Image 1: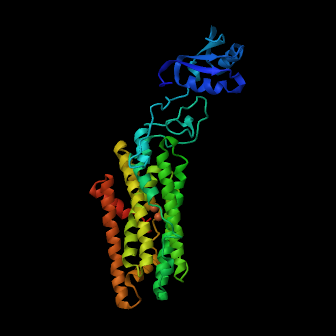
Image 2: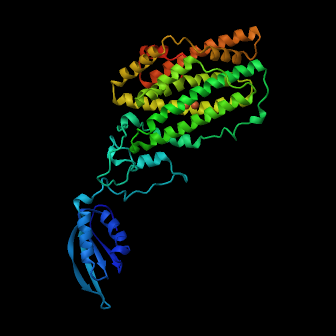
Image 3: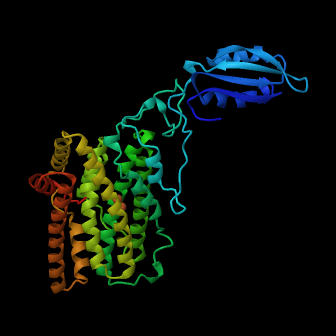
Length: 421
Ligand SMILES: [Fe+2]
Ligand SMILES: [Fe+2]
């Protein structure tokens, strides 16, 4: 049988009775027809007409009647004609010409997205129906409220999802834990403070996207799928950072009130694009510089490896945040002002919180110093000041890349939280 535009189709039903498999042939054949198209059911069974006629009425098809014909061996074949009803139609056309083609033996999400493009707007009554499925009418309305492609789904999402899946690593097996050296207790305590801070921020990076996943319409499932890889990354970062803090012998350090206040303002966001902007572009963007600093000054290779792995993942999160925000800005000019307002509101909520949390500042200074000798600490202090300058500089670059003017970018960067995330 051929394509969905077929006007008439015939099937051979043999002696199948109505309750014994006949419908498994009739129903899919009717689905191949356009409404108004006619299905001929050739049956060797007597007396089917009443059953078929009743079924057609219930299913809102039209039973056109039957005619008998005598076969070559004297058997009687009855030909029942059914016209597909208008109201029986599921929304959408069957993907009858669909055949995904592997490239070098692979079938990427990017390939699927190009074969099954996302709609501009999504219908909440299609529920969890996968994009491309035919949807029967009459389904309930679902509470998804992220229904517009240009606000939710940048075109790069499938490629980033493919990359994310390929880049997963294991905090249990892939780290050379048995080669972690013993450091001077002062240096180890500084490191453990830094990793405590990182883990606390990673917890927010896990929770914040989770609030949006269930609001994304499944027509844009790749966005939810990408965010699920991001959440798996954050889970791994929490795991590996807490393990690192405890594997060195110092245990966890302090969680500051400033960090707590800063992360609450992220958790309370309800707008998806504002959250992507504050969490991924500004927060995780700033963390890229922080992670590079820790990696540069790490006193051993195991610690450097842990931070470098996390930074690779974060680079992807920042990339997704940037393409999300850029794509949304390109389709909604009023969004510039809303994002700026979001930064200002957050800065107002952080007023009085002070600067970079003391314990973190001390930890980073000693880490960069490598020891507690006054000379080294002076160098560590300078390195920490240099980190703040570099964070500001790179935030401005990212903001300009997102589409803000140089002036806007400088102002927004200065308003960014002293907690970095
Ligand atoms: Fe992370
Ligand atoms: Fe992240």
